Length: 191
Image (cartoon, rainbow, N blue to C red; front, side):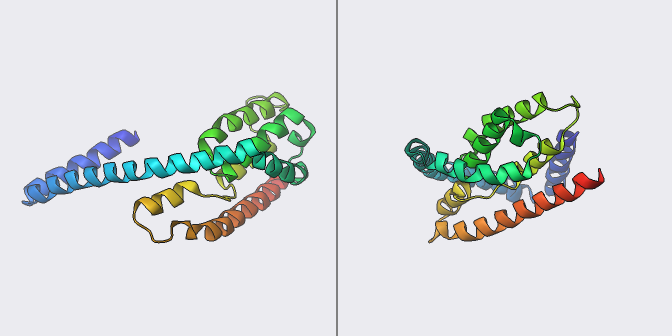
C-alpha cells in the first residue's frame, strides 16, 4: 500500500510541476538529488570501511567480550526468563554489544538468534514474551558508544568535527534505553 502512496505523491508532484511551468526546475532537482546521493554514498563508503575495520579490531582484541562481561550482570537483572538460559542471554549480550559498538550488520544475526532462543523458552508459542518485547525495545534504543554511521555521514558532508556527536549520542541513546526499560517493566505489570 505504501508503494501506491509514494507513487501517487511523486506522480502528482511531477504533473503539478509540468502544469505550473516548472518542468525544467523539476528535472534539474531530480538530477541534482541523484548526483548528491551518489556523492554522499561514495563519501561514506571509505569511512564506513574504516569504522568497520576499527570495530573488527575491537572485536578481535577482546574489547567486545569485555563489554559483554560488563553487560551480563545488568541484563540478568532486567530479563526474567532469558537470564536463566545461557544461550538466550549470550545471544542478547552479543546483539547489544555489537549494536553499542556500531556494528549493526553484525548485530542482526545475533538479534535473530536471540529471538529464536527466547521463543524456544517461551511457554506461549506465537506470542511475544515480556523478555522478547524488552529485547526489541533495547535493540531499537540501544546505547551507542560509537555511532559510526552518524560520524560517517557527518564526515561525508564535510563536518569539521564529525566525532563531536559521540557524547550527545551516548546521552540520548542512554536516556532512550532507560525510558524503554522502565516503560516495559511498568507495562509488564498491567498487561
